[in-house]
Amino acid sequence: MAKLTIPELIKLKGQRPISWMTAYDFIQGQLVQAAGIDVILVGDSLGMTTLGFDTTLPVTMDHMVHHSAAVRRGAPDTLMIVDLPFLSYSEPSQALRNAGRIMQQALGDGVKVEGGRAILPVVDALIKESIPVIGHLGLTPQSVHRMGGYKVQARSAEAISHLVSDARELADHGVGAIVLEGIPDRVAQYVTQTIDIPTIGIGAGAGCDGQVLVFHDCLGLSSGYPKFARPFEDLRARIIEGLTQYRTQVENRSFPTDQESYHVTDREWQEFLSLETPI
Ligand code: KIV
Image (cartoon, rainbow, N blue to C red; front, side):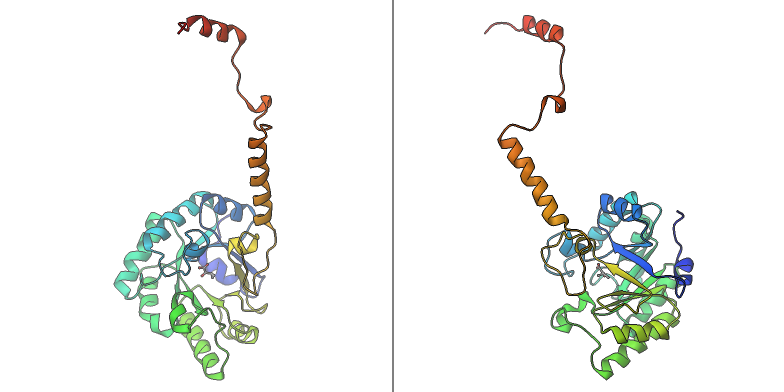
């Protein structure tokens, strides 16, 4: 299937639900592409899922470039959006330099940035240089300290109004879609009806134009799950079971078998032994 473009992604709004999935390496890229998912997001959740950090804050541009380039090698035919990590887009020139690395070194199709009206100068600078931008509002993990933890956002009338205005401004400034994370379903549905670009929800209910999940949460690889995540597989248990069987069979010598071994002919072996000088 041909790779979706950003204009085609926007046109999907109102046509059919849009599927996004995160991926962080070559094999995950291959798997997500093979499943026919519309968009791969190389999220800075990389920090937690793959690098073992507690938050996304320690994730660097080098991490994002390294991992998204690997995802791209696994998924050459899928639209790939890459997160700009914490403090990598504090001002337009810095954002441009870093988004340029994603586009040129990792062959990304666009970048995602967290924030609303406060980051419009960054959004404008990127779009002016034809770098597609995806917005991210609501529970924005790079602001974990300001939010006082990973808490559902936009629950008061004032906060809802603020978020709706942010979404309108981002859409007016040309972002290709907005990820809505950790907000009440009614708010997400209202935003979805208010703007003419797709909304992609994660913990934002069923009223968005599409959904995104973290790869490890979707497949049951994580050790714990947020309320909104549904594990569609139980790979953690299955992988541990497979590894345990491997260990057991190494220990009881039932692995490897004769069929899993390479052989040399008796003739070559005898000749070799005759070449050996007795000790
Ligand atoms: O980093 C990430 O994976 C994300 C998704 C949770 C939307 O931003």
